[in-house]
Image (cartoon, rainbow, N blue to C red; front, side, top):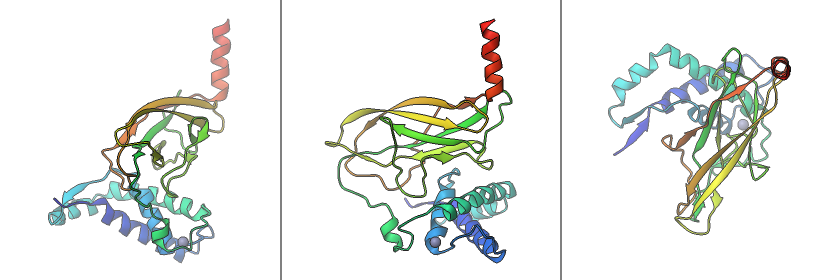
Length: 243
Ligand SMILES: [Zn+2]
């Protein structure tokens, strides 16, 4: 069966249109709009919005439906603008290399492949999503490497993704296929005006025969929502408790 993610067409069209628009406006923050940068932005967006799969050949009716969904298009534009800004501001030493060299190489070695981890950060008193949070993913006290440069660690939360963040950790070599191990991850979250907070989650993984290079959205883990409190409010509360 041949399946196709309908979002690819929509996101590709939207990202290219936005790049053209930003380029035309001579926006000073746009450092590059080469094919590699555009592809990075497209994967940035596709990794952050839910896919919509159809069986190839049945796409036509679905594509009309999707292309006329204005709310969806507005959301995609917002995430795409974040993506363009991030890709433009990321210094990438391999930027001038041919695309193939930046892409994930599938390796035929036993590996622990991680699902993507996603979570959302809320304000504890308003329950509004918090944007501008810096989220660092650690394993054994060290920042975790991501699969490729469209994934950043630390990452940030944005308004358009409604306070959510996603990580895709780079596979870790295993001894053999079928090895089982528990990984204890740590999240370090910093937002201006809020208490710095730490969260932990454990994930059992069974090793595969090779590294996973394609993102399977079925393979995604939602981390418990993170609730943060503003520094002043937090202090007031603890003083009240003491009395
Ligand atoms: Zn470029």
